[in-house]
Length: 226
Length: 254
Image (cartoon, rainbow over all chains, first blue to last red; front, side, top):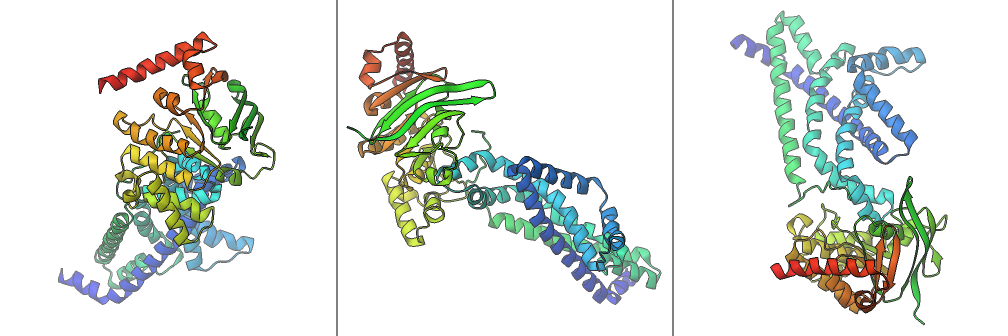
């Protein structure tokens, strides 16, 4: 135990740096995924047929293939098309594009639950389609989606670990380094497991707080079709 | 000569091969309260949705004042501002307070400044007797109160015509009265209204004209006295008295 604590202490600075990178990857991937995912969800719900087809195709493609394959295609594959991205940029892109597909599905469910009848109500007072989406549907749909969507940040945080395979210096890469230096893989990986756990707990608390903060008294979703 | 606000000519709506209604002609004059009655599934609600352009008709024309609103290239969002609609299930914006529900159209559609919108929204809530509930969310209001907010939301846009789609059908019996009261006052103030309802008491007392629809067409149209006491068709008499009896019995039980 003392030996393990020693290892932890020795690499603490390294782990903190790695955790910072992991959090950055999570934040950027989540934000990119959210913006793109929201666009996909809206396209799939309100878009014309061809746009719905594109959105569906995108979601199927990115949910149907391993993230690691996507990451390698971006990092090792794109250069052959003349596009060379840095390791960090490749990681951001892969995580964001992949997360978008999952977030789109969380959001689409909520948007559809609110959709039709509230669209009618909004337009009945003269709001345009886009104004109704903006001021009526999204504020309700995002609240409705929040509890299930909260899985995504948590899941993404852990998923970022794969980027060490293209040598991004995240928490996982730091663990590997510690293991190589100390010849103590168990101790090293256990140490970062603890760090991941702490990050997940903190993130979870933040999400719960957000859920409480955005709650509206008596807000019930009227899913009745009209 | 009364001035027509809304003129419906030969209006037809189909879903695929299913004809919802066909060749509907209806003229609504300024200040009229028209009550539309008829069995379920005869296209009454769809008719209202066509009037406010939430559904596209397959044939015919609708004129609002001197403008054909069903014409190609008509500015639909603009037309909707001039027509108010009250829905059976209220359809309030559940994430906004009563006041914000009424205010949204004023700030986003009419582009009123914040203070003016606030004042106007509060005035509309006062009109339906809910000024003291301004800060409540829909989920904290009774069905009757929610529907009155729905009415205030539509009124705030100063519509030329108000459409009511079975406004009391989703309400508990003891809450129907407060909503009908608001509608009665509106009618007395001279608001032009088309009301789809089964409330025969309201129809008899408030309507200038009753329109009886069945199987997608207008069977008969006339004053309440005409339809209740001198109907041209046996079917009209039958329907009216059946509904009235049903309604009367419900009242007697309480």
